[in-house]
Length: 246
Image (cartoon, rainbow, N blue to C red):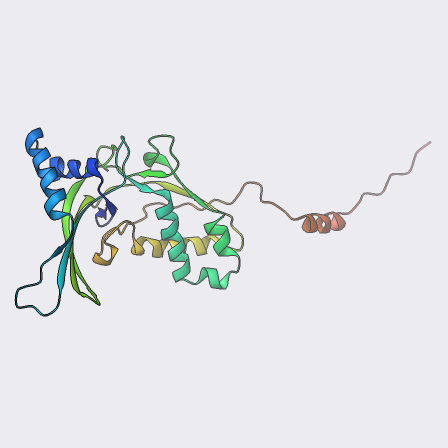
């Protein structure tokens, strides 16, 4: 990852407690419990912040977001990478120029963990790995702020999100029906996918990655249509039978 990966999954109770302990540094069990109850009661959700002299209604919404994780560590969902590549192919008009490619990539494709990111038998988890330890990356938390306008007034959006630091590594393989795609098409799409990025807060420049190595492999035994096989057989010369010798 060139920039941090930002989690966008609203924290459940376990995720919120993880933020309190690891993000806020509250390690005392009793204090952690009190902080947990206060955040859920007073901070999460929408709150009115319109000043007394204000004419337009203004609200603030606060939330805590996590990166998806298992007991092993944080991961990127395989569907996120597939959507990232699909978006990149759309940006360079591959779906428009090569009819039928969208279905072969979307419905006929699947992303799977590979190499250092294959830490268990789950095929949907592309684990984020520390480049120095080759272990699941240790995450931190960061606050992000934004503002949107609505018919009822302005809404300030504040969220504290779990992040995996820049430099985190991940490996994946993408299997799909090749169709008319050439190796250069795939490489062009991967080049754009790096810039589009993964995870949340992409509009703030987060989630961008750099591909260190990519290999495009053709199927060992590509499927050949029956019509092509028949045409091939017709072109194959048939050896004349040798005359019998007395």
